[in-house]
Structures are given as structure tokens and as C-alpha cells.
Length: 382
Image (cartoon, rainbow, N blue to C red; front, top):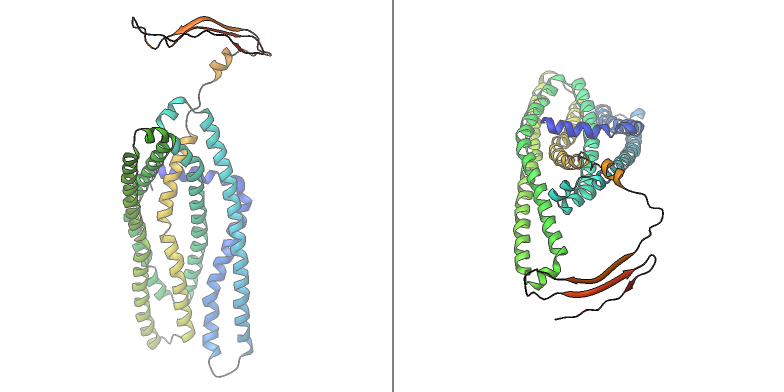
């Protein structure tokens, strides 16, 4: 992550500080979800070791009860964490939109000359919503899945530290793959965002100038221009999908290879060290459960890059300099009640001052008194 990305991410994090209590409640709920995930393989071990021995064990009847209880607790904690985080995101969304629109109203004229209306609409309405939705989903995945991975890894070490070391091999490999994909994905997201704004600008021009397009028969030209830009956007979208989609299949391949190696080592250990069926099943269950959160963590890269790209557009608007109004305000005069009179006498007008050019209007008399308007004119066309 480069310096601009870190700066944008730090600015987004600062918006979370006023909502610390809600965030802490959401994080605690995510921790409960992660703990319930870790408890599932822990319940499998005694069930398999003691439940299929041919003897009825009364204590094992508690295992299904615990599983149902875990499901209830997990569902409630997951709902609470999503609700609290959604509330935080909604509050931040309102704050960002207020700051963006305030700066938009007071921005310098030069900014409007350099930026199209479609870009401004895209930033205030769509991009700010996208970046918070992306970051909210990332926060859920990062915290919940990271806690789940830590809990399951701790349990795997408790069961069999030798096999766990094999599992740990996949982490640096995944990090290496993500680092290679990151650079390309970042550039593609920026180009895709720029093309989306250009496409929106073409639609804006065609809609605003629809009369001119119809009068001059420019429908085919506008359609060709629109389709060329839309097709380029489609190609870049596919490139971004390919670059971002490589994370998950590569992660699955690496995890499958690690699982195969674990199975081979576990079979060898069972012959020499007497590994129980329950212990082996609990280890495999924990390892299979850890694959899903690992994939989610690996997939964070793509939405992160998309969110940071959108954040740059948001903060670019918020950081625009404000039009200096002190001098203009000092020259204004406050009028309690307007009064005066407007009068034109024998007003003539021509579009060109060339000799012999006919006047468009001639000898127009206009008299407007306070509170009324009256037109008196004599117009001769030559």
C-alpha cells in the first residue's frame, strides 16, 4: 500500500472515532461469532472418540444441545454486529455527504470548469455510498474472519502442532500472490472509474443537448460515441474481474495442496503416535473451517483497491479550496427596500455595427416604476 492509499485509509478511519461505542459493540459481536465457529470442531472430538464405542454415554447427549445453542448465539451475534455496523456506516455517510455538498456549494469557479457535472453527481451520490459499503463489508470480513482464523489456528496448535506448521505454509504464499495482483488491480480500478465518469458525461451531454442532436441528425454520431466508450469500459471491467478473481481460485488451490499434505502426514502419525479418530476428525474439521475465512481475507484486496480509489475522489472534492467571499461581502450593500425606476427611451439595437446593417429593433421605449412594469414601445422593421 502506497502513501496515498494509507492517507486515504487513515482519513476514513478518523470518521469512525465518534462512533466508538457502536463499533466496540459490533466487534464484540463479531468475536462471539468467531468463538462459536471455533467451538464446532472442539465438540466433534469427544463425540467421535466417546460416542461410537458401543456404550451409551449420557453426557454426550449434551453435544447436540450445545450445537443448537451455538447456532442461536451465532445468529444473534451476527445480526447485532451487522446492525450496529450499518448504523455506523449510515451516520458516516450522512457526514461525508454534508461535507461534500457544503464544499461543492462554496468551491471556486475554476473547479466547475475542470470537472463535469456527471463526475460531481457520481462522487456525491454513488461513490461515497460505494466506498462506505465496501469498507463496511471489509471491516466485517477482516475482524470476524481474522478472529475465526486466530481461534481455529490456536485450536489446531492445541491438537497437533506439527500438522499446524504445515498449514501455516499457505500464509506467506497467499500474501505473495496478493502482492503481485495488487499493482495491476489498482491501475485497472482507476482507469475503470475514469471511464465510468466519461461515459456518464456523454449521457449528460446527449440529454442536455437532445434538441441540437435531433435538429442536426446527430443520433448516429452520439450512439457511436457512446458505444465506443461503453465497450472500452466493458473490456476494463473484464480485466479487473480477471485480476481480482485470481485470488480465490489460487487460494483454494494452495489450501487443497496443504490439505493433501496434512492428510498424508496425519495417516503416517496415526500409525506411529496413535492419533485418535476424534482428534483427526476435529483437526480436519477445523482446517476445513479455516479455509473459508482465509478465502474471505484473500478477497479483501479487490474491494479494498476499489474503495481506496473511490475515497480519493471523495477527499479530492472535500479538499477543494473555498471561494474567497470576504472581499465580495464587504462591497455588498444591504437594502431594506428596493426603490428606483428603470427607463429606456428610443432604444435601438443591431447585431452588427456595419454600415447599412438593418436594426433588429428600433426606438423601444420602456418605463418601469417601483412596484409595476409598463412597456411602451414603437417598433419598426425595415
